[in-house]
Image (cartoon, rainbow, N blue to C red; front, side, top):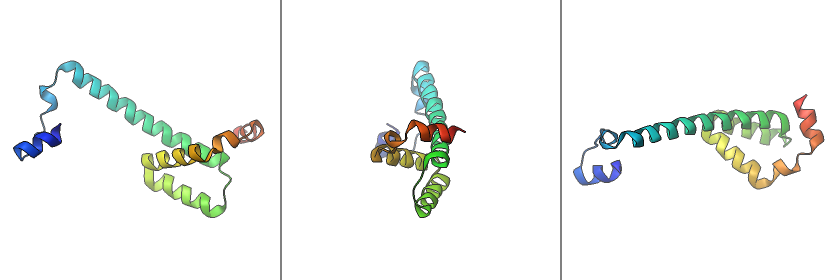
Length: 102
């Protein structure tokens, strides 16, 4: 909405949220809080997965290390999509999970 107003008016209006009802501002605040918390949790969980269960070649592990380190939350998302798309979560047996937990 801000981009549309900026296109029409020609200057950015930083007070667009002030015109919205209070419950909408609260909803956006809660949504932002959960989004930020979810991104941090995903990043931490993908680091744990990488440390415990990633059994690729050393060069692939270094590559994913750099993606997680430099990419921050987006790197965690990319790595999570990679793990999900390759089906690596399904291939982890209960013995590997038990061994990783120790």
